[in-house]
Length: 280
Length: 313
Image 1 (cartoon, rainbow over the protein chains, first blue to last red):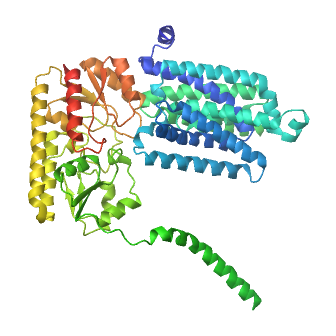
Image 2: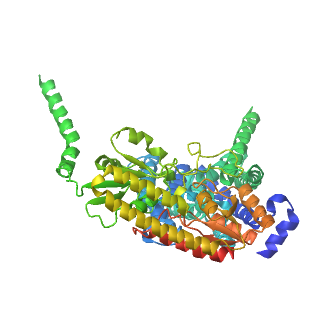
Image 3: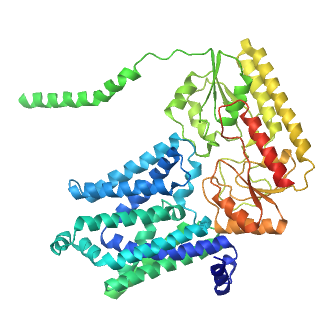
């Protein structure tokens, strides 16, 4: 870790990197934002943004369950509940009884309400309110290692399974015709999303985690001409918003997560205008 | 005619459906009101008031004390009034509040209960401003111009005990002597503890501390501690990067040895500050949550004494 800190000190000898917590936050941004940029592309093109939003909300329920069971680290209870939640939604979705947004809305509302009820019953909501907006400034070195592993794992999944995921998102019947097991692909993607959202929620925050998934990919979509540039642009925009937001939030003394999202939103509207101009 | 009949049957079915939950609940809901179990019922707004009142009414079987916000709620920053609270207040003979703006969310509810005698425990205590001696960038509690954490100073707590005792004497003259005896006994214990803490703390060399949230100004005033910085004034959010680094620089430049977090809130930000600045992290308890035990306040303060002895030596 000291070597990395020293490297940051030489490369970025600025005021905002003076303290270790900002170095940690920078590293966390450098790990989380490409992850979100990458996964976000599939969220946007498979029309899953509402689904990932619901997953974020379910984290609150996971925390509440963790509190009730008296575990110190809420990661396990959150992860367990998010997986159950994600698989529950995909199972109900697969039965095809109602439209996707309705089903997800039902699950999201139920999960959030359950979380609020459980947390308020055990008293003291204040202790967990940091999960709502996240605190990327308190990320610890060992947690950075965890993020690095997740990033590597997700890149691997992407390299191996992206074509199948893309085709499933485009047209399920076509995908099934090409011997792709649509159910398995959908469920695997739901699990990947659940893991990513749950692990990063502590630093990004329940309220804004979905914006980080959707905005960079949506902005990239405005500009990209093919799948490769779509992914590349999404990761670049995500990284840019993350680092810019972190620096701006330091100098302006404002909440980091919100600033990152606002930066990404500005990029989105710029690319939107750009694509309109180009089309003329 | 037939249409009408169809309509009416549909209507009656709908009506029946609407009434069904009422009926189901009715078995529980229509049971006769519970008789008052005790002759005099006192409701307290939150934990510190509960502990004070518990001490004043100790050993009095016909007086009941119930705490509105529950033992683990802490400060009422984000408390929402629940149905059972209003029910509790309606049958209460006295309502003990901290005052000084802590229960400001209750103003609306209190308008509906004009006959309920409210005991404001902070009456006559000189209050500190919410931002005493600190620079503050605008985003304050608008409703809270004064600092409400009055009870954290033992002297103020003694004054609160006195306020509650004399108010109860007036409201319930039959048992006045008992309230007085209990109240005086508790005040005795508190002032003994205060003297002990002064003996132990007054000679310690370091007086500069950094705290989180606004709970300790009264305590610091009492024991002549100097709060160099309050890092996170808003209990519901995390400090920004700017606030964190300003606090770290301040600690490094002033040589503060101790950072105090509170057990009621997440301590991750305090941990960061302590790691970066080299100041040690301690937990200081403002006695705002705890066990259902009359001695809880005394025990919390004794714990604080031990922590401070270690931190300021």
